Length: 251
Length: 296
Image (tube, rainbow over all chains, first blue to last red; front, side, top):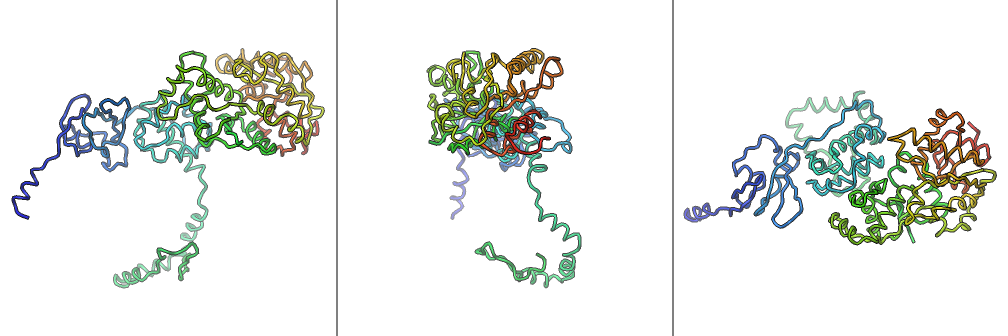
């Protein structure tokens, strides 16, 4: 490849498209995500930006497209700009979080009803589900809680990133994401069955069942350790349910 | 054909005694049903404001869920759920303008035009199962048990969703007769229990509840049979407050109609969660030798 070819390639630039950030028009490269477009336009993030990887939920964005009455949502770090989109970011939306002493809760639905009585203001309009950037069935988990099914609410809300857009759209003024968080806490602490085998394992560790093996490993020189690791018995990828290692002294 | 069963929130929390006893009866009667896998609150109260369409969204959404399952009939046990769902259904069937507004608002759902039929377990028993078939299944006739049938409001009013003659209903009377009970008619059978007034004006609610119970007792009833968790709250749970407030008040057990049916069908009383009723409820059934077990 000659040096002139390289020079020509660097001349290629992304097409600029118009977007409206909080109502003001900017020309931004069409390849950018909303987050980068906002930075390209000159804004600096001090809130409303977190992992930049689509996980944390800090950068929930609301936008509209020309000729479309629908409210669109997405995470700014994951959504690519489109021509003439009107957008803004909502880094925080006020929602009342109930206060409670978690150790005093027992897992009865009535406890959630008492902490969040506004639960019963839901009219099933479904605006919360429609606005959720993570496609959580928000209205359905609220319905599950009204039915006293905390486990179902915990499962349905599992993907919630606490962005708060549900609360921003709620006709009944519910703080859905806080209620769901309480449901998941109760589910984890009080309703999900304990793993009994874990207790046995912890007891085994405490009585020193694995000390000898660990001491042996700690005493090895580097090369023996490497060799032991490489020669360890591994479960084959095609192993069936009934597979068991030959050496089962630690099981 | 299989029917869709809509439980309602209260039946999953405070009124387990209504749901569990009914489900056991469904099985005993061979009713093929499917509980809606996805449903929300029915709305609880049908809004009386003509243009308050947002409160019609919840019941219509439930009816859409039934339609989605490919079933044409939805059955309720709670008379308030019945009322709300049935009235929303009538609106969607008959009011073209409001149907359009509601369907347009719910743009994420398929359109709905009242294709589903809403029934209550009581009219389903009368019209689909038939009293004769119910009678054949009775194992423990409720002989000697004097029960007053209490309808309240929502099974009978307004007229367009009434499952019986609003002025002179007979469905619970015939139902109790079929179970073998002695039916005690009383003038307050269709008087409102006080409903949600218990929240805003508890004294007023207490007064009407007392009137109903007093009427039943004076006509010789030993128990009341009803179909509504809110009526049960006012007439059953609140009886302690009634007994404290009115010196002439007398204790009277209150049952869901499905609990009495479960007893008559010989279903294990543990299924019917009598511990959620007044303590005297189980005692009366034991005294009448309708259920076994030592009186506690």
